[in-house]
Length: 234
Image 1 (tube, rainbow, N blue to C red):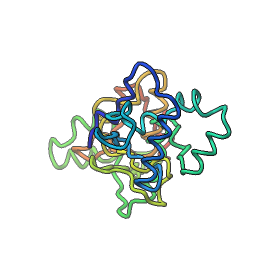
Image 2: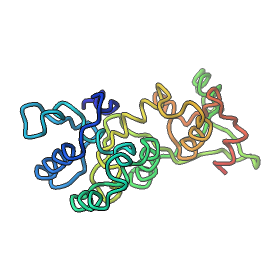
Image 3: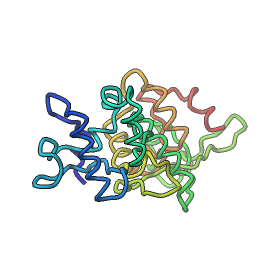
Image 4: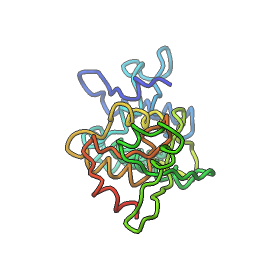
């Protein structure tokens, strides 16, 4: 998978004319029968695609709000043209929204349901000194004394959302496993103004943060207070 192309946007200094981009969409539709354009699809050189677009990522070009605002939003005719080809309007959402949507669908779609104990960051770091200590660290109690266990979401790095009715159409072909890995390792999408609420949301879904240990570790070092997190599990 050309991961770099997934993250990149069109690099030309000027946005291509709508008619040229539309020509590329018509060619793609003729070749594939839909506009479920993989996030890493690059229009090949020496191909029927318009020369000025060859080498560019088609999905990044059209599935973004700026393209919609500049070229489509005020034209009913253009909207109808895109509708007729099956343009996926839901893909105009932010990448973060698509990831959350896909994670929710993945959690209900999986045939194997796993439950793991919730652990504090300190316990994740210190866990495993001995078998007895390990067992003790797995016991994190609610106010009534019972351990906290939640269903987890642990997505394989190679997982790409299939074109399946179990998933929202807007998330089809999303490289979910890779994106989750980048969230874990490099805090993609979970920094800045919305850091707290986004980490909180991922914890409520049951994301496995410490994949090597397959534990659901609280991200208190990223600003998540356990007092805010625990009610989501009760």
